Length: 310
Image (cartoon, rainbow, N blue to C red; front, side):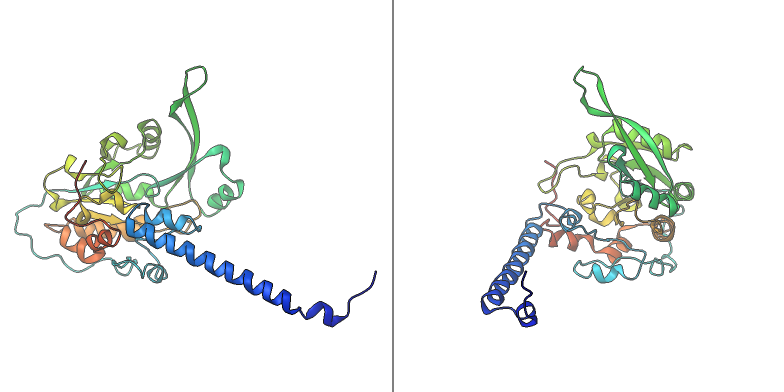
């Protein structure tokens, strides 16, 4: 077999160069088209921001405990919090003799825990989570689907607890009334919450049937089902669209996954913020100054005064 001369191996022909140039342009044009589609989806307000970024394997931090997340969030109106940026100033004097207890509404999945179907959970992910100190447990839960023989289908899931979960629930319950509000089905969420809330810190639990449908999103958590006075109620959720009906009461948090062993959202960011809010007569001014959620929703095609339940 003849050996090609070095010049034949290293020096491309004109035709080859032109062909590679065309391929490179095709790649560039393809990415530009993809980015244009993402921008159009955002303007239409169809998928959530986290869903859009999941198309390229990324997560978007809305409330970060690290300074590096501020750069990744530069395209959104509100500034993510770090542990150094949690408000520490003294709240203005309260006009009331005594404040009503703060009501804290907590999301479940990707806020307090994350769950994976056990049969499809990668062994490497499980081992890395355990090595990093994340606690987990296996759970059987009923599905809305049925087996061939008509029996209720049972799903097996592995649940990872967000670091600091139990201490967070304990400390927060000392100054606030805790309510669980999840868009998950009761057959899945109820046994899970029974497992993580053995001391009954949640005063009540709301599941998917308690959510509402709006013009822009399904499974929205309308706080008016809990109170008509929004001055002393907040909702913590990794999905901001969950609280689009009360944007001034929402605290967006970083979505939790089993890869985040060093996560300190609950104890390092959210708990100090909730303590500060518990001393305020009205939580909404501070939450607006912190996150500017109405502007965030407007950027995603949801007018601040046009959030109507269907």
